Length: 285
Ligand code: SAM
Figure 1: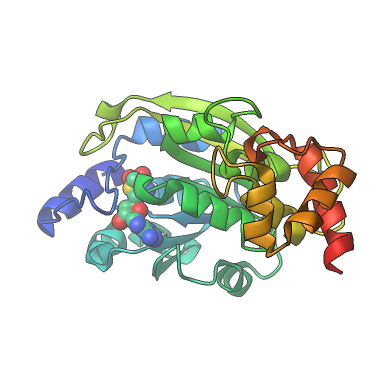
Figure 2: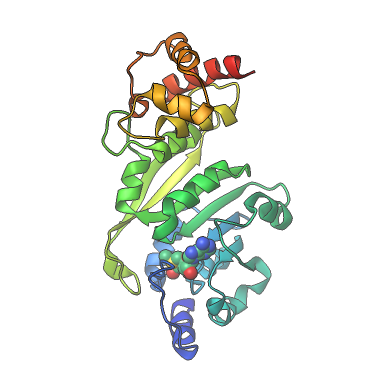
């Protein structure tokens, strides 16, 4: 029996009730899962972090190809289902029950994989897509590739550019970190139960060399979040609030970075943000 059927039977046997609140829309079709794992280019020996394994179907597909998977699931009620579905690949899969928004991801990955390069492959719970992706980008672990199933609108936000309505901190951070591209589109009926949205499988591949050079990544991340702190407010107000600066200090930083006084944060390109970060490093140190 394949893992897809095993998952369906185990979910029934354990009388599992899907939680809308936890974003539980599972993929049980082996053909679809195989296409997803193909698109993610998972191969033997890869170290994978999967957030939200659900019934363990994608976990099983990746483990069957020889990958080592660390699967982090919040819902302890799924444990008997996961143990049944993943029994054939016990040696390759580590199950951890915890909240992806709270656990120390860096420590967990270090403990499981040592210093080996890690990729993320996950069908994310959509209620925390943005927060999880930001957390992955900021956690400090070296994640070479992040392949995530997200709601189409979130995917479009990741790829938005300055001047577009949906340009946001997520877009700037994703594009500072790596190159984002769409791998696949999935219709709602491919999921159990079907969500009310179309899903895109996205790949964010870490740059070997960043598109903009910064002295401090920390400062760049702070500037990115400051730029979008209050939308439609001037960058000046956001900088004063985010860095506890007086108006003259903030104005000076904006001016020396070569920006217009009245510019809005959401209009800045990565290069302009990097210039501002460089300038703030000088005034703050
Ligand atoms: N990977 C499975 C699949 O493709 O069938 C399930 C994906 S489902 C969209 C999202 C999964 O994330 C669910 O199993 C849910 O319980 C889990 N989840 C929700 N919130 C979580 C959190 N904060 N940390 C870890 N897992 C979470």
